[in-house]
Structure formats: structure tokens, C-alpha cells
Image 1 (cartoon, rainbow, N blue to C red):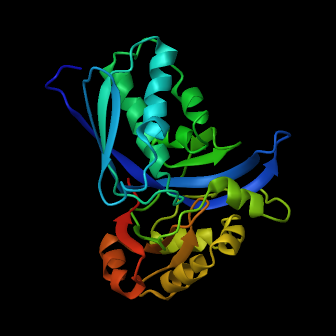
Image 2: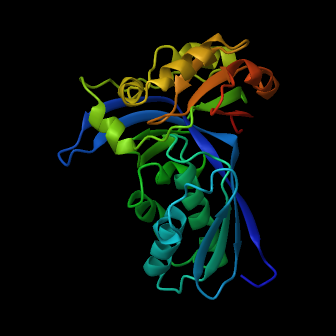
Image 3: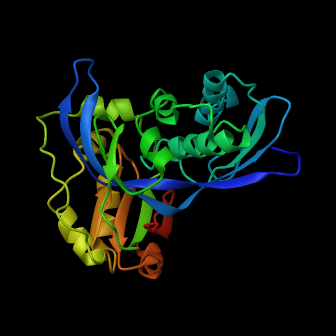
Length: 287
């Protein structure tokens, strides 16, 4: 990677259209079945050559980012360098547009984009580096974010199979300004497990996608609401928004999403959902 080659990459937000808990491993980790899609909204990373590994962060949500050496991007880059036996040399500048600890995989998507980009920048394509193995040590969302395509996620998030072809439905993402720790949400969950219930066909439009999701839940919604009751208000606001086919929580929260016919319809509904302190952004399912 020469000095003139600054690589600019996007790290899109992911949405768990549904997320069911199907079991639990002997080590306590939960098994899931989830349909994961990506949006056209995300963080931006600028990666340039450097004398050492350095991560800086700007943007609307930069204030609450962890120290650079604790950042998932830093850890991912260092682990990649260690696995490949090369020096970790890169200046990585993150524009943090997505809220943190929000259930939309912001940190995981940043780390995944870093791994994919540094493999090329450091000329590691022939080194046989296992990105999924590196990613899974950093979080269960990393494998699907590394793939970056609509997928069914099984196991603890590492068993990926191609998802259905989805319409470019509009999405309204809403976060009430509260972060949730994933392990706390899983810890607050009570009850049994759900069966795997994947789509039998491809939804043709946003309304059909919403109808198919009616039979599939996010099993983490109730425990998340117990920890963060305002999520109930977010879901209520989305489900009352004009043009919204369905409102759901993504991941372990606290971000929720509403499904609309297209991005313009989601944009038009922003004002009806907005509350003081809430982050509300219109986007769409990436093709």
C-alpha cells in the first residue's frame, strides 16, 4: 500500500430481521437462527500506510468509542498481522456514524471492513489467513459482517448460509440513546428455545417481507425491554408511523427498525417517530 493509496471503505449497519434462540452450548453460549441483512447506512473507514498501527475516530458517535488499543478495529488489525506474521502498520481513521452498543453491528462491521481491506493492503491473499477464525474471537457478528451479504446465521453466529433475495425495502432505524451490553441481554433472557424457521420463498416486496416476519420473532426483545423499557416506546412509535409495515428490534438492542415500501417512505416517517435524544435515520436494505 503506497503513500498515495488511501483506501476508503464503508462499514454498513446490519439488521437482524429475525433472531431466535435455538439452544445453548455446554460452554453457556447461545445458539441462534437469524436472518441478517445489511443497509446502505454505515460508518466510513480511511486506511493509509503508517509506521505503526494507529486508530483514530471522529463523527457523531466518536465520543463514546473505547480507547484505540481496546477498539475492535485495532484488535482485528493486530490479530491479522500476528496471524500472517507481518508488522501491523496502518493509520485507520473511523468516521463513526452509527451508535455504539446498539445491536446494529457497528463495531463488528468496522472490524470486518478493516480485515477485508488490510488483507489486500498487506498483500495477504496468498497467506491462507482465516478471517472468520480471527473474527469470531472478537465477536459473534464478525463472520457475517466479513461476508457482508444477506445470510442466515446459525451456531453462535459462525455458521452462515445464503439468505433469500430481499427487496430494497426502506428501513427506519431508531435508537433511544441507550447502549445495551449483549451479554447482559442474553443473561436476562428466560424461557425455552425456538425452532429454526427459515423462509420458504423470497419476499417480493416490503409488505410481503413484513408479513413473513410476523411469524418470526426476536427472542431478545423481552429481556432487552426489561433492561431498557424505552425500547417499548420505540417499537410503539414505529408501529404507529405512517407507512410502516412492521417494527422490530434488531440484535440485542436497543436499536429498532421499521420496514417501509422504500427509503422515501421511511424518510417521510422520520418526523412522526423522532423524540428528543433519539437517533432516527432512514436507509434501505442493500441489494
